Amino acid sequence: MGSKQDKQPQQSKKKKEKVIKPPTLFLALIPVFTMILLLSLGYVLFELPPEPLIIISAVVAGIVAIKLGHSYDDILGSISEKIAKTMPAILILITVGFMIGSWMVGGTIPMMIYYGLQIINPQFLIITAFLVTSIVSICTGTSWGSAGTIGVAFMGVAAGMDANMAAVAGAVVAGAYFGDKLSPLSDTTNIAALATGVNLYEHIGHLLYTTIPSFIVASIVYVITGLNSGGAGVEIPEKVGTIMSTLNTIFSWNWLLILPILIVLGGSLTKKPTIPVMLISSFVAMANAMIFQGFSIQDVMVSAVGGFDLSMVSAAGFDIANVIPDIPRLLNRGGMSSMMGTLLICFSAIVFAGTVSVTKSLDLIINRLMRMVHSTGSLILSTIAVGMAMIGITSNGQISILMPGEMLRETYIRRGLHPKNLSRTIEDSASIIEPILPWTAAGAYMAGTLGVATLDYLPWAVLCWTGIIFATIWGYTGFGIAKLSPEQQQEMLKEFDTEQKVAQ
Image (cartoon, rainbow, N blue to C red):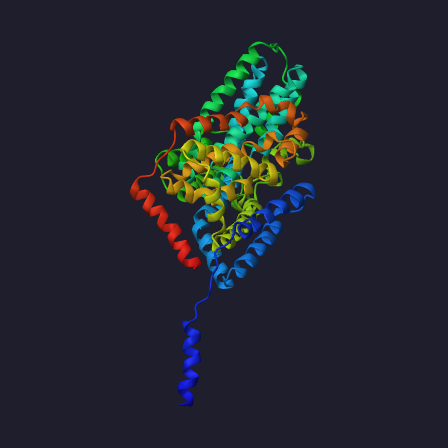
């Protein structure tokens, strides 16, 4: 009898299921407001690193989840699911670092810079600054690096010819972010694809709908401005010639150095798998480094992993002690390790998103927000508002892409819209807006580097603010808006159903 009585309480305990409460709007907003508050105060005002601030926000989200009845295992399972889902994109980021280091040591990127500088025409300085900076930024995948090197050289040209400094600075910023936006080497471009679950090249291709019209408008403005100003016969500053002669000393030019770029472009057009294409391109660049540039296999491997460094150069006539500071700023970059900072922010944001998704807090917030959305145009406009608010508050382009991408992806899919509409819109409203806001890191960097106040070059950075105009127009007209087939929509929605089951 005693054994039966002992079994009854055990059976009743087994039958007891954990009680999970749905979040109220107040509880749902606590983790989000915590993150915004910490980033706006800690990151912007006190310049604290963003990763621990996001982790603290995740802890707050975890406390809310436990209060609502979820267990630690539920939270950990949700985070693991998010990491597993984003791992392909994370691998692409690491491969991008590998490719940049390979392209640099192989001479691919330096050759594009060298020939880009040769086409400077003082009479058309503004449009030339825009075009060359765009090319360099596409090849390097870094807006800051392009503006801080080639951009500075153009500012020297502008000063020498007494040109409109604000216009040249705006053209440099616009070109730097045009290239950064469309480059498969860019961290923000990869993060936008990662956050929305879109193929990298598919994302870049969809960006053309807003970026190319903005590019055309900016080019027209710069050409007309240049034609109405002087500049013919003005000499190019000595610094530009020094950069070109140094590059010519370090590297041997050969048209085969373009082959790594053609491989990536070919893979993009034929929609081949991203990582294998990037690796093939990297291996070709590494072969170029050993065959044409004379680097050892050790230097090539170190460049691919840790980044290229001028200390590797042993070319005749090259003395690293006499190199101007622009050269190492231009060349010392790349390598898989260069992506670690970006990956840390990504992992921190994934931890936060995974923790918040357990309680379905974001679903509640988005549902309330979407009550005001009645069309594709209003959805695009709402996304722009969210993106601009995030970049304005957090001043961090990576976070401002990751969070809206995570929050709004399901909404787009349920409305029959391809997530690449979302990835494009958050780039238009977050990453490319960042350099024209004076209080952001990008705005401060560009102003300090180019020597022109952010608000002065803002009107001339035409491409940075026209993107949201075209995004809004396309949203309301339907032009350039990719729809999902019923089969695609069902397949994508299965992912969210799986995530919800894991959370439960």
